[in-house]
Image 1: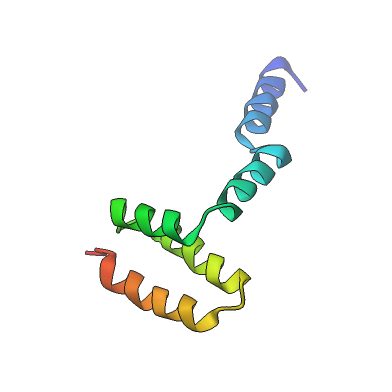
Image 2 (image 1 turned 120 degrees about the vertical axis):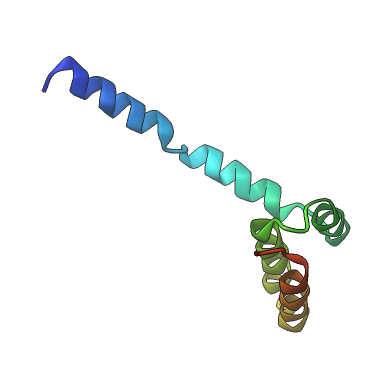
Length: 81
């Protein structure tokens, strides 16, 4: 192994999110309220990842019908063309 290989490994290692960063991200997501999600989807109606997070919010609360209804709303809101 030479120095170039070591540099490549360091670059790859830095590009992988740490477990702590991922846990913090999921923690921030789980503390959002319905009102916060509503405001966020109004601000970014084409953000499919946000809609999915919002659906997961309802799924985590075992409100499957509300998640399904939200999915239909997302499909009507997201401009995909």
